[in-house]
Length: 441
Ligand code: GLC
Image 1 (tube, rainbow, N blue to C red):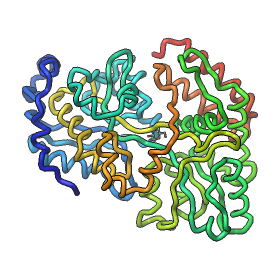
Image 2 (image 1 turned 60 degrees about the horizontal axis):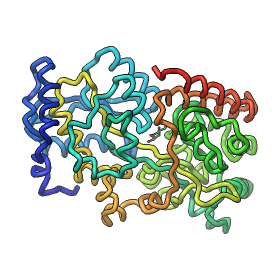
Image 3 (image 1 turned 180 degrees about the horizontal axis):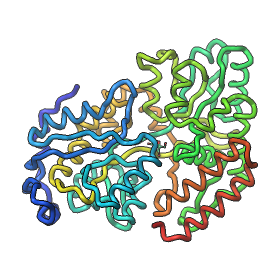
């Protein structure tokens, strides 16, 4: 583990007058058990971090981070509270608890697609005044914009997820096949590998009815030249020939037997398990899948390649990766804001971000850590990520959760064969328009 000699110096960095004022104001209105928030680094107490597991399944990087934080800040203890792994279930839990006034946790991990909704609904504390501009400048502008809704910034960025195509190098070598760069090529290579009895299935991804399917569909649609919502956020664009082409291709993966029919119930974990069990040649998954598929419990360790996702023939290469990832948010009911801010600041500093990259197999949000050559060398997915063509889900609209639900419910129905791709997209389109016309509460 890398230990940084300047960690205490960083921790003692002065906060702006506005931040001190904001901290004092916020804390003086709490129960009185809060440590005096004179400046970052002087807080004490115990805070609770509500977080789902991230990084490789074999090691819990959250515990490594907590141990390193407590060493750097001996006056603050962090309790870990396990959160649901599926983004939608987790969001519902948070909404119920925070809108009910719960202060049973102080800081929580949250999906990158939540700032607009959480900002609008008062589910996250606005953070602008707690961090000065030199702090925000350690991240890319795009990242900071994604945390911001109507001028307020509701989170700090913990790690970035990109999607990749993971493939079996050994199988492609045996069959003398190149790494596919188009979806059509992937389909035909998968069929060849299956016909030659080299592998049971060709392709796995996340086709269950949940947020992950919105990610996968957004990528296929963008690869075909389509989108889901207009760039000004006012209307659905999903009922288009390009989107229909994408969904028809996805359904064809199932009807051709390239993907198992159970793929319509697969989230990240099920698709990855099929791959690490050696049962599928190609996998669409997030960054950490590289660490997992080369881990000690993987049957395919050493045989896994990672490249950018394919595109459709005739479209520019590579294909799109949705921008995923997780942020750290502060519960507006927390009574320990000074300690919360210390924790957020440390988790987005060099030491924590290096742990997240090297031991967590996730893309760090701090540009200088990602660019560090020692960090780059730890994971072949990092240099590939630099060449990814990124596409954002339309999460800048406060009604995003309803928009996404309209996408994944209808797309999943077409994938299961209970409706046609065009009927599914027409239904999704009218549900998205209804959601966009609502006030998002
Ligand atoms: C990953 C991504 C997140 C996305 C989720 C969908 O956790 O980081 O942004 O919403 O997958 O399952």
